[in-house]
Image (cartoon, rainbow, N blue to C red):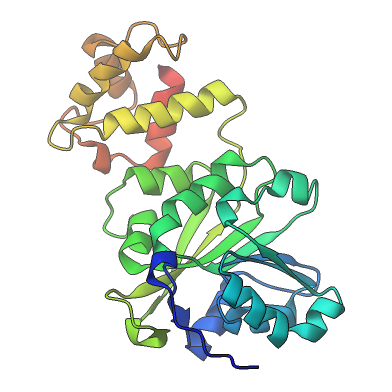
Length: 277
């Protein structure tokens, strides 16, 4: 059967062809014989092949019917031996809570750039049965933002740190993809995934409301942005009065510079602010 497949731009398809990057992906995921791995967008199966060599079982989520056909042909034996299961459909519709129940799993994937944020949010925040680890190949700029490589936090970096520890593994040059994208990529690992900072849903909601409000107007200092929290009482009744006096009191207690901007505040301080509101 012909294995020729023209990448579909609409699906964000860029196939990885670097052996070193494939090895590093598996290494970053710490893949071993007892692991259940979910791969998002397996494409033609370059990473799938490496995962199958190491993991107990791989679930490959692919929405392109043409690629499903190629994968079914290429991994006939592994499918027959129940080492690989191909699930046709959108990864954002996949529900690990019902699919895995209490089974632990890892996510290792070269994910489509256009849904990076949605994938990370889904598996860190929206599902109950979160992966134990994620090793992802993403746009280099996004990887740098997630780990706050320049020392500046963002809504994205704080959203990941709220549930896990992100780590920058390596850059993957755009020439190692087919077709070649316009930008370089990078591998990141997201470890120690848990809900430890949020014992209750209300605390989680408050934290995300806080960071969104804090970053709402980039030119304003953080204390002025946070004034807007008081207009959101309707949705979060536990915020009563958050005028500048209350914010200044919190800043003084936590020794935060009143001229600081949202991007200057480290994750731990954001958690402390949310607990003092």
